[in-house]
Amino acid sequence: MAASDESLSIKGTPLSGRPWKKEARPRRALARSSGELSAEERNRQKWAEAQAHKKEMKELAAESKEALRQAREQRLERSRKLREKRAKKQANEIKSAGNQVVLVNNKKVAKMSKKARRKLTKITPEMANILLRRH
Image 1 (cartoon, rainbow, N blue to C red):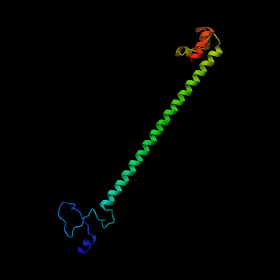
Image 2: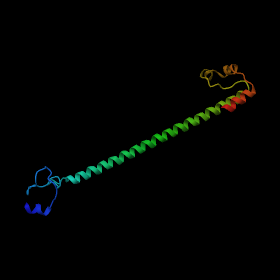
Image 3: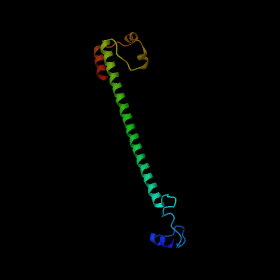
Image 4: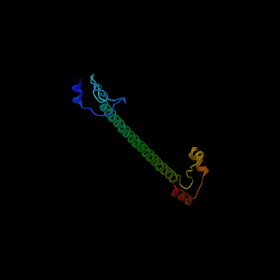
């Protein structure tokens, strides 16, 4: 036993705070007889696992940030297209109604029938042009 301890020539401070004994092995530094990892190897393994977890979390954060950015862009694009479509619809309705009716952005007026809207609003051609340019 003494010969094997000398061949190992392990240097260091005692793990338990007591002076080294000739028969004592620094158990944390050596591999156990059952084949488990030494303390240093376990520490390296834990560190590697922590680094992998950290990297994975960063990737997840980047993916979620990208997904949120894309969702925001899609929402803005949909709203822009909807605004354009609404403006085009208003312009077409003004043109098709001639000088008699203009589309009003009031909810109650929007719910009215075309006939009711025609009776509601009568405008001059100049006013129709002004409203058409505004939309």
